[in-house]
Image 1 (tube, rainbow, N blue to C red):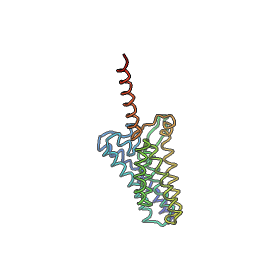
Image 2: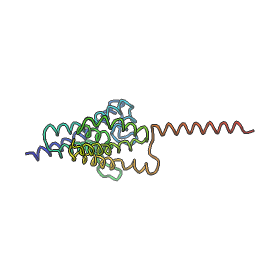
Image 3: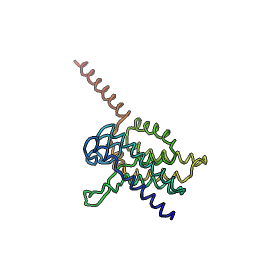
Image 4: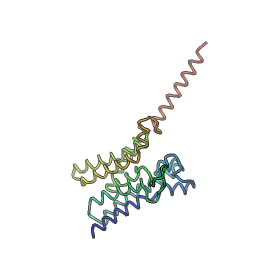
Length: 234
């Protein structure tokens, strides 16, 4: 009986994680299909690009909650720590490869669309230990603003989760199995972000935040220097 309950919880976690909130929110906000915008992903970052801050924020919150809820449901029904860990992983998997978003790829192969898993992975961490949000949110914003790559910020979520749960496990405050959650979430995000990692290596990944501001300031200063030098020539 417990085996069937555990299997049902994991299946429910995948299905719940598969709900493409970004697709729904952008459709409501702007009436467009998010899959046709920029990266085509259904997460908060692309929802922001497609329909503005409100859509991006709403999508991120819903994606966080759907993964967190899978943890809370699992904890309410079973004492099996492995199910507590695997439920949010299945939610991240569903978010990245949604059963509700099948399509034929360029080569005619069936594939499942979705997001990169950042918000869902964060939600899973919060579900396992809610105070993690107080650590990860400011650090994530600092990484996003200081380094300037959304993909790097997304990947930092799994790393931060592993570090938080490793410290807590060493102090005897949480099960060591929680560390595995951060590792598996990181693997899923790395796989989903393969195109971004390729662009990072090539130096063509989209950037924002402080690096972009500093670059614009340097360009403005250089343009001013060239103008002054040109005016000084006889």
